[in-house]
Length: 431
Image: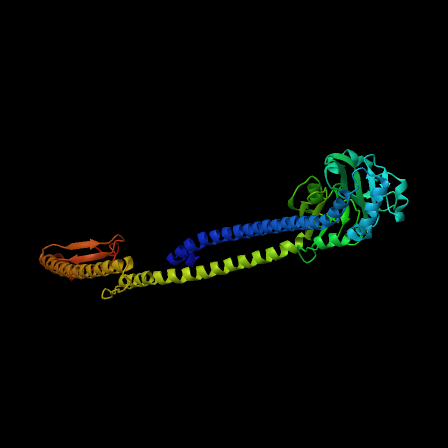
């Protein structure tokens, strides 16, 4: 408490308290700002990873869609004559379009009514059925260009599959039918295209997966999740609506994850990247803690330097206080000297002038007291001489009735010497 009431304590606390508050505010702001910036960077990174993966996947799919499109635009396909179509497809299967073998559930040619015009011998059952997705015939995307379907259950193979089709047109505008390739989502060679394009790892346990327009998984980095419905998962719902970006949410297992998502160009599909948020935030918070530690260390060093400088600046004032005490104790010969070249030195000079003036004043006072004491002593002696020679008795008592004066020739008249009653009580003496 004594230190707090001292000038040093007040100055140091005045500097420390605002500094500590500012440091605490800066530390909190730095922590929050650093975490927000890092979070935005992670979200931007994952969104960009999803976009790049979607673009890579589309590029890889292009080789399969282009193969079907070349067949659909080939010679002798305009009017879908069975013999001409058969000859064209035999050539394609024979080696000109080796990627057709990626469609493990078969390739077939359908007319504008969805009826089979041609199917390979190993897919004889398919030749007996119509187009597996009759509802898409009303879709302009199906007629205008290469169409990539969502996951559906193929009635021929009984497996969940996807379909890619290229339109057959005559005269450059009249829709005649399609060349369609069907691939299962579990065993098709196209899985290599999915895995190659989605081989991204946002973090140690990061992964990417592919969903169709209904939110069903076409390919997943984790085994056993193919064909699972993830439409309720926030990033999947966003990419189903054509959105692109990233967000933090809970996955199907209830874990908080950061996900990037982007649609696959030319399809209703979407790519989603995923990483556990704990793996992201822990390094960020660790780095934030280090930043706060550096701030605290810097604050402690600053406080130490301020303490040293203030204490050093106050040393002349402390010395001046000690000098004032010496002079107050009567040491008027003492003087105070300093070489700070600031207000403290000016104060010291004024203090010395004051001390010199006080010394002179005190000496003058002593001279006056001595002179006055001599005058009083002379007056007393003259008074006593006058009283001693007076033909009277001069008596005086204090408040308790004790004589303090008994002088005069009257004392001799009653046979007493001068001062005989001094110290006696008036009640015990008879005048």
